Length: 247
Image (tube, rainbow, N blue to C red; front, top):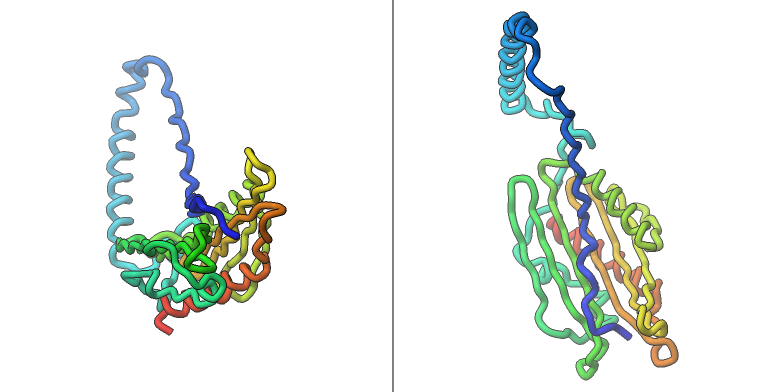
């Protein structure tokens, strides 16, 4: 059985850095004599820095691959492409078999940018048209064109572990892939279980996730089979990634 509220959508990577405070300057101006003696070296230092920066900008613009990012070179996008409607591209045939009836209208968006393309889809599915409860599916695919997403991908996994998700690696799917599972009991009624399973994939410059959420109440319903949901995540996601690659 599934729950009536959508699962939280905070599973995307969001770990903003903390700025380093500036180094305090000494109180008061330097002595006059020291100012005179250092004026010329300071001027040459500024001019040298400006010249070096100009040469570096020219090199970046004219020499491919000259820049090496902290996490490695700019990622390879390969054959992955942006689609206007991720919901239409993602057939999710396995989940559709588990939950044949649709609740409401799927929501989607796609945005394009020289540094990052973003595609999103959400759907709510039910086991039958007469049911009032539903399961939630959230999906996102991003093409990182300037910055290697590896560090943020690892940070996301660490964040899920801190939130008590059970993490299992998925071999032979992209460069990195794992499934996270969480059984979260209601604080007001401990018989209610809110379940989440999410698959994260990184393949070169592509990051992708598909998240399923449902619920059940002890004594009044049966818990959705964890392995069945896991296999649906894997099977449907492989199909989605092949579709985004034009295969």
